[in-house]
Length: 229
Image (cartoon, rainbow, N blue to C red; front, side, top):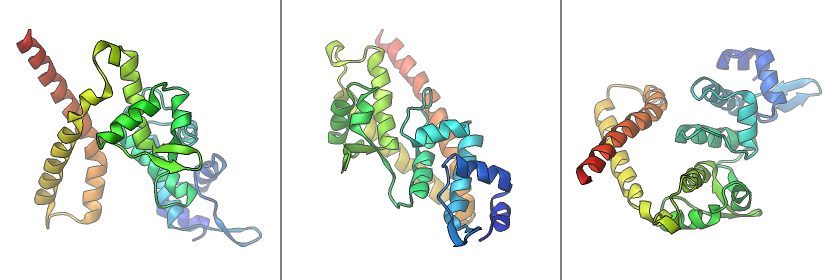
């Protein structure tokens, strides 16, 4: 497709699209002639991913570029942000699987990264993959390790009785909640909405439900603390 159709398909004007190319956020177009560029569905998907990161996650283009280069997003805990970055990176790099961050790079700002990653892998929480850069993690899995690194900074370390193995129960809890969520969604939506509508609904609802569940969990935690007092 040509630029005019890409504008129509994405709702984004060509000047903004050119900025996205200059920032390195979109895959290079193919060239049918010296001064003619051709675009495809990957460009439509990539632009949509950038817009979601801007509009729903409030990331600037520079923040998106930095995150795609493997830099940490300070103060960003939402798993949905890293899922969308994974998607955008995969499109940008022309690969089917998510790109990865090496444990060596992660260890530069999260000192116990490799120890924690291997503990989490043993618990079935993430997968360490071997790459040319050594043992590596997907962006989402790297974020799990980064979050635990910040928890360590608050004092939750082996010396005070809090090794990462203490939270093995989270995996089972997450699987249980996810199974129920999927069951409720599928039974409620069966025959009622299209696949496209369902995907759009989940795209908005899942990040919000993380916040919703987090608040319920805090309330339950405080009740249990008071009961044990």
